[in-house]
Image 1 (cartoon, rainbow, N blue to C red):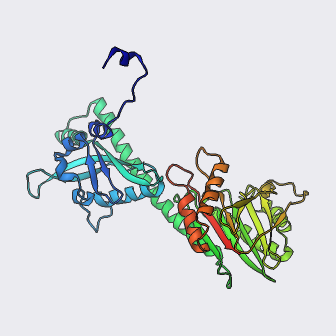
Image 2: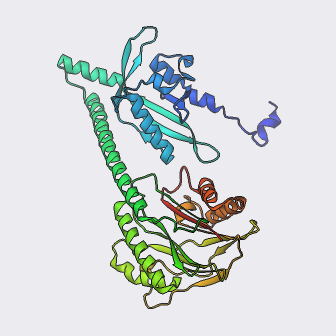
Image 3: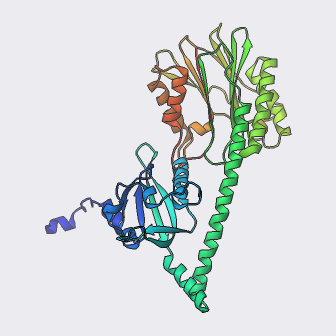
Length: 422
């Protein structure tokens, strides 16, 4: 390198990330989502007494055997942990457990090890989990020393006692977290089942309507979003979506009350704004409904018009038959249901559509991403809509969810979606 090279602008420095991974001081594995070992760092090879060729390309279940009768076996727990990482896009820490490894060079001989593993996602360009970094903290020596001193009747030093106590507390906390996780999973299962039971099917005779409900991964975030599709007769169709601020079984119950109330109101009044005003009058009497949002539309298929009213909800989109342009239906918007002046008049707007147009209603879980303006998400949805304009309603609904639904480090929220082709 010349002197001129040293005083000028620094040249880009190339980082060999494979070398960085191998040099990490703590034992770590790199896994595919199917639990095939892609790489092992030097610390893991040293601690486990393995060669890289013994591990790379093998299934993790060959290294961590699974006992089908033991849900707590290392392999079973690893699979459950990785499934959580794939579902949430977030790190999952496993509790301290004994991991027996085959002793190198000794047939059917096993070495007892104690590890605390943590599994972290590596996201690909599409935001999905492409690889898993499985990092382990080896506390085998501490466990052995503690056991030996106990057998010898010797007391632990202050440092050893503190370390042993922290390890014991960590294990207790992990076991408690596991019980809470199971309880949340059960609550999520019940809440999602309740939510799906309350959401309606598409009325008979409306084959050009597709609906989707995607629950949140976390049990703490599930069950606030809903949709409704009603045949009002005289070739009129009422389509609505809404979002309850809250989660779990309580939110599912509030959702059911609001959806039923709005359904009855729109049947009785035939006007979106009047129906939402009726719902706003009822919202303060329902605990948990104060900040709820809703979007009600009425489609007149004879007059080829859409009339809509919004209560704090993201706007609907109308894709024109040419498939190249889409309008955002944002001419009117009012505050959410429970924070609106009850003496005020709800607003509504109407517009004409051409046969072959497509109406899309959704909840904010479809477009929101952490640290991003909601208009960016709305633009992303519009782009996806025009890109897939040639698809039928069912295929289009699936494509929109696949393209736009947040993944990885984004808000974990449930999503409702309705697609109507005229």
